Image (cartoon, rainbow, N blue to C red):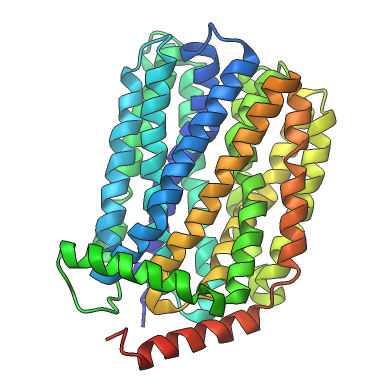
Length: 432
């Protein structure tokens, strides 16, 4: 029986890494990149470069995630891989402090490595969900993790926003210096609050411990085996395709919202405050969606969130005033954590528990491959048409396609297929 301490310790990693997702990825990096590192470039060109950087980071995760997940399952090494990628993210985030003005190329390289650390660690963090939550707890525990993330990320982001607005109060030279110091604050926050998951979460090892070489060989074998067997998990695979599409829209909104606001001429301070509003609205909203998943089903909760995102995209297309950006920030906060939390728990119900690392590797692979297409699409539309409004409108197609496929997913059938898959693997002697 998993105790409460393990669940809270697991959720604290969301508290830790969300500082990067909020302060760096969604907030200060796109702002600082456009106004500091790439200030000499045209608006469309900087959007194009930022979109490509996000896409490159996602491609690297796409390549690595399923293989690393399989290796971690085989070697019982989820926590070790989590620590490795978290450390990479922490170091690279801190390194952004040292990138000088105008060095947009170096800034992008360091940023891509930081995103790789962030995204890579999420593969193994997500896979630990089945180790800390029982079947009937998945929706709520997953939602608690995201709510912790919104609260923790919001607290640090609030501090960093205040620091950039009043740098002299903190003994800093100017706002640019404050933003650079904020990157250091994220690195420290991420590192310190990653400690509980490493100390107190117990990883269930479904295989006998093996050495690194054996884990690598076994991981690749296991990955190939899953590719051959995935046809038996047709419902799970269908969900992955649906998730791939609609989470593309979610990730694109997160990563490109500030860039879009700047392209419309909105003041950067308003954009930062709006992001902060999203964080604190997202904290209770994620918990509400967790309860909704328990009572009405995760799929229905995801559908509601997709519909809200479609309304957001349509509104953003014709947005004229900064108060509208604030309104959209509140609206996104209501559903962003919910769609992420319920997607994770919905998927966890339809996979073999003994292969959670590998299957969450596929899950994250699909999500990050989606994050390749969305920013690229926005970047190319922006530079081709010179219209940021058309670029944001294109994202609506991803939500529509994802909703259509999600409507075809039968959770109970998916769970039955996963259990049959696991039983077959066990009877074949592939799971000791």
